[in-house]
Amino acid sequence: MPFNPRRENAGRMIRSNLGFQFAKIGASRFDLSDPYHAALTVRWPTFVLGVFALYGLITSAFAALYLARSGCVANARPGSIGDAFFFSIETLATVGYGEMAPANVYGHLVSSAEIVTGMAFTAIMTGLVFVRFSKAKAKIVYADTAVIARHNGRPTLMLRIGNARAGVLTRVSVHLNALVREVTTEGHRFRRIHELPLVRSTMPIFPMLLTLMHEIDEHSPLAGLDGHGFIESDMNIIVSLEARDPELAAMVYDVKTYSAADLRPGMRFVDAVSQHRDGYTLADLTRISLIEPDGATSVE
Image (tube, rainbow, N blue to C red; front, side, top):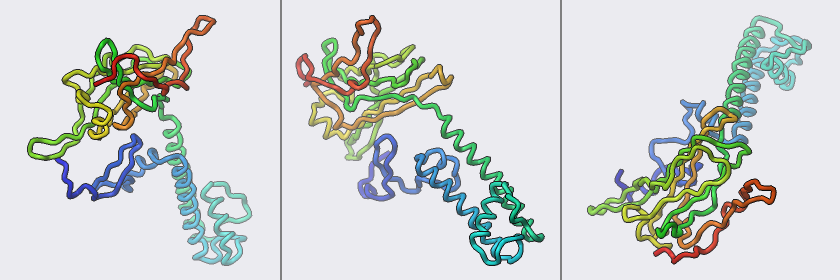
């Protein structure tokens, strides 16, 4: 869609987990009408704090109801916030130690409502925790930078990724795209996504390391750009991967972005795979980001 400079600074700034910074008008990061999405996408510390905060809010609300009617809880001291609060906790957890108990119809009604609330709260939280733990992750490691070196006589964009799982991923499919700022002849600015065809985008297995390669020809949006040109282009390279993890019997997905500042023309990756003296192949993932000057002629 056309870029309107008058609205460039409008809206709330959002930082995505892909490293992008953008703003939206008419959209919110957390939608109260969709609490399930929010509960699954927030970070673990935020989720845990939110659970305890909600638990405290529920127990405090019911404690206030017990305090509102003196004598509704047997053996509770009149006006005691502590007794009402701890009785609320015991009731919400359906424990009931026996020292305090509902003493009249009002007390039974409130405690019954709290028991039902506690059962629903426990069921919902158990489900959310299970879903958060059961989400399959690819555990892919990426080189810190992308390089542009000559391969078979052609300038080639190369990105290196590694499988950090002990097992092997299968049915791997990788897609590479470039998010490029363009200006039309009318002077309108656009953000457009261009596919960057890979030399090979599918692999039957992914045991250790992969080097993704895109040949820069006359049809590539990277054609004619040097180091300074990449910075000026404000380009973002987007890597998306999907594969099957046989150990989890599930598909896994991962996405990584590189900014124009992460591109290193005239460099190549240092070898990270070697042959061990015992005869097996050894991949050193700690060397995945090491680069060195390309031995071939520098990319124009």
